[in-house]
Amino acid sequence: MTRPATGSQPPGAQPHMQGKSRFSLYATEEAVLEKSDVMLSRLAEVAGGVQDLAEAYRRSYREQRQLVRMSDRMQSDLQNAVQRLAEQARELQELNEKLSEEIQHRAALEAELRRIAETDVLTGALSRRRFIELAQSEWARQKETGSAACLLMLDLDRFKRINDLHGHAAGDRALESFGAACRAELRSLDLMGRLGGEEFAIILPDTRVEAGREMAEKLRAAIAAISFRTDKGAVSLSVSIGAAQGEPGEALEDTMCRADRALYRAKSAGRDRVQIFTPELLEREVAA
Image 1 (cartoon, helix red, strand yellow):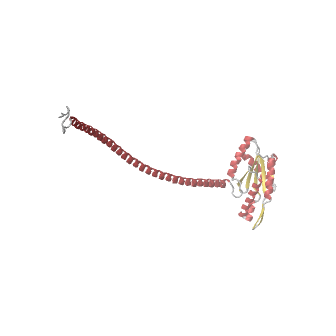
Image 2 (cartoon, helix red, strand yellow; image 1 turned 180 degrees about the vertical axis):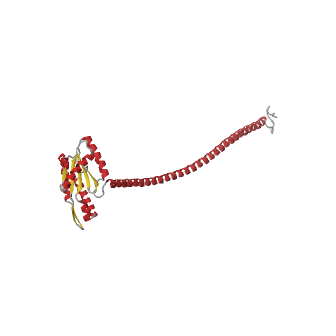
Image 3 (cartoon, rainbow, N blue to C red; image 1 turned 90 degrees about the vertical axis):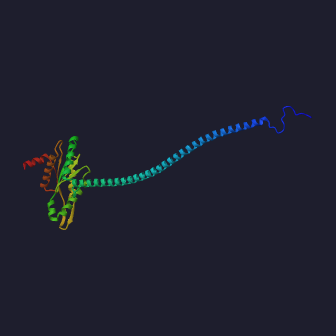
C-alpha cells in the first residue's frame, strides 16, 4: 500500500496560508477603511470649504443685489435730477428771454425818452440844452483841428401873428413844415436846435461863411415856398437868417452873439432875407 508523500496533509485539513490570507484581507480592509476615513475627512473639509464658498457667494450675491438696487435707485434719482435740471434750464432760458425782452424794451423806452427830452417834437430840431452841448463839442473840435464852422440864427417871421389869427394848430403846422423843409436841405452832420418859440440855430461844420450863405439862401427859399390853408385863410411862411463864421479860438457864445446881430439886421431890413455878419455891420450898429 502506497504511503502518502511526505509533507502532504490529510483531506479536510486547511493549509496554514489560509489563516494568513484571512489576516491579510483584514489588514487590507483596515487600510481601505483608514483611507476611506481620510477621504471622508477630506471630503468633509472640501464640503466645508464648498459650504463656506457657497455662503460667501450668497453674501456676495445679496450685497451685489443690494448694490444693484441702490444703483437702480441712484440711476432713477439721477434721471429725475437730470429731468429737473432740464426743466430748470428751460425755465431759466425763458426767464432770460423775458429779461432780455424787458431790457430791450427799457432801452428802447429810455432812448425814446431821451429823444423826446433832446428833440423838439414839432420840428425835429434838438432841444436848446442838447444843441448847446453838441455845439460846444463842435467848437472844441474846430479849435483843435483849425477847421471852419458857420453858425446860422433863424427866426420865423411874424409867427405870433399866425397863432393869433389862425390858432395854435396852425402855428404847430407851420413849425412842422418849417422843420421838414430845413431837414430836407441840411446835411446829416449839420446841427439844428430850437432855442425857443420861433427862434432856431443851425451849425454847419467844416463850412466857411460863403458856403454858409448859400445854404441859408436855400433854407430861406424852401421856407418861403411853404403855404397852407386854414379855416381862417391862407398861411404862408418866411424866415430871417443871420450868419457868422466861428473864428479860431472864439467861444460859441461870441459867435452866436454875432450871428444874432446879423439876424436882427435882416429883420430890421424887411425880413425874409439872409444877412452875413461883417465888421462893417458892427460899425453901422455903433454909428446908429
